[in-house]
Length: 222
Image (cartoon, rainbow, N blue to C red; front, side, top):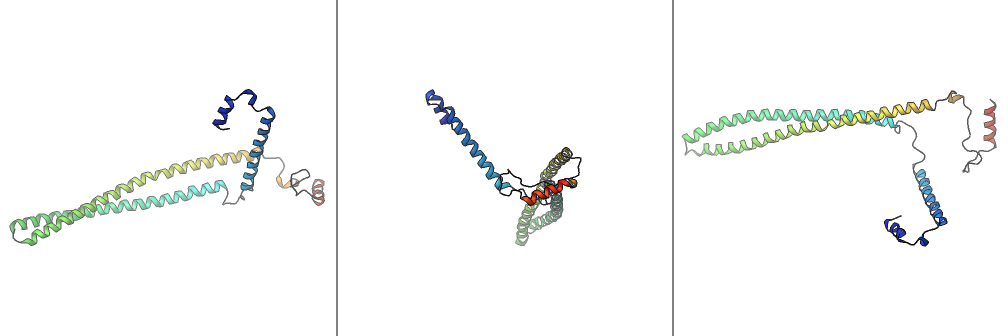
C-alpha cells in the first residue's frame, strides 16, 4: 500500500473502509502472488548443480585462497624487481651526475680562460640540458621506487582476505561436521530399504506403478 493510499484510508469515512470479506480476498490474492513468485524462483534455481569439484563450496574457496596466494607472491616478486631496478637506476644516475659535475667545472674554467672560443660555451649549454634530463630520470626513478613500495603495502589486503576466507571455511566445515553428526543414524545407508520417489497422492504425474510397488514390497520382505 502506497503512502497516498494510506492517507486516503485514514481520511476516509468509516463506512468506506473495506469489509472483512474484501480484506480476506486481498490477503488471498497476496498469498497467491507470493506463491507464484516462489514457484517461478524454484523453476529457475532448481535443481541445484551436481556436487562436483567445480561446484563444491569449500573446494572453490580453497582454490581461491590458493590461487590468490600464488598470484600475490608473484605480484610481490614483480614489485620487488621494479623497486630494485629503480634503486639501480638511482645509483647509476649518481655516477653520471658526478661525471657531469666534473665536466661542468672543467668547461667553466676553459670558457673563462678562453671566452672567445665558443666551443666551450656551446658544450657547457649541452651539458646543462643533459643534466636537466638526468634530473628528470632521477625524479622518475624515485617515483618508481616509492610507488612499488606503496603497492607492496596495498597488497597486504590479500593476506587479510585470505584469513577471512579461511575463517569462513572453518565455520562451514564445523557446521558440516555438526550436521553430519546430527543426522547420523544407527543403520548404515547401504542396509536401508529403498523408498519410492513418487507415491499415490503426490502432485505429479510420475506416480509409482504396480511394478514399483512389488519391488518395494520385495525389499521389505528381505
